[in-house]
Each structure stands twice: as C-alpha cells, then as structure tokens.
Image (cartoon, rainbow, N blue to C red; front, top):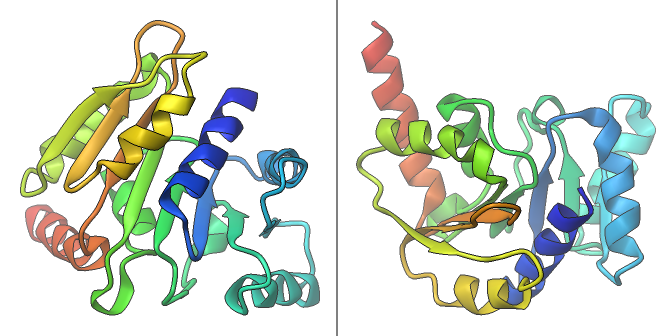
Length: 199
C-alpha cells in the first residue's frame, strides 16, 4: 500500500493535477492513504462512511473550492459526485469490473475538457484491465512498464501520454493505467454500449 500511495503522489505531481479524485476499494483505507500523502506535502482530504453529513459537506467543500487538490473516496461515496474541474482520476485500487471503471472514469473530463485516469496495478491485478480493454475496444490502450525502485520513471512516462496508456510492471513492480482525451464522453458512450448489450 505504501508503494501505491507513493506512485499516486508522483502521478499527481507529474500531471500537475488541478483537482483529482483518488479511488480506493475499502473505506478503511481512505484515511490512512490521506495521512500518508499529507505527510508528503500533498494537499488532500477524504470522504468516508463514518462521517456525518456536515463533515462530508465540509470536506467536499474544501475540495470543490480548491483549498485541497485531491479527494480520496470509495465508489459508494462518489456516486452522484460532480466536480467539473476534476482533471485526474487515480485508481489506487483497481476497479472491480468495466462498469466500475467507466463510473470512475466519468468523474473527470467533464464539459468537453480533457481528463486522465491512472490505475495502479500489481501484475496479478492486470487481468482486470484486460477485461476493461476488451469491453472498451473503441479506446486504444498502450502499455509501458515502471519497476519498483524506479518510480521516478513514472513521471516521465505519464507526461508522455497522448492516448490511453497502461504503464505496467513486472514481478514485484506496481503498474499504472492512464486514460486520456475526454474521458467523460467516452465513458458515457461505453455505458450506452454496455446497456444495449444487456437488453
């Protein structure tokens, strides 16, 4: 988890994110992630299930107003969340399925703006993104690799992104998936396509 958090930090700085959402799969991970990144000088807040409505509103207002640049959140708490200036989504944990991926990706690139989605994976988790790639065949993914202990190369890899890119890893490395170019409109198109398949 520490390596994932460090790579997330490097990605956010490399992309010079205006506003970023960082997704985790478990509510119990949210606060720990934020504390780790705050200690590394990243302005960040979070939403978690145990918060009352007032606290959630205060944390969300901090993010929307630009007082902090990143918000850590789970899928449940991100439902209905609309942040027009969000230009980066980081999946610290991989999405559970393609619908989950599309939902997260749709949080960025709003109103015709460009957006980037970065998914951090272990080699064993790459099967998830293979399924996403098959389902979203209209999006061209590319792959590159970043090894453990060489996280500085993550920054240059991310900066060179022009299309949808998977920055992967081998053995004990951590991998990153980046998706760019109007993510929101592509996500909506993917949702419609999946809905038609289910009929």
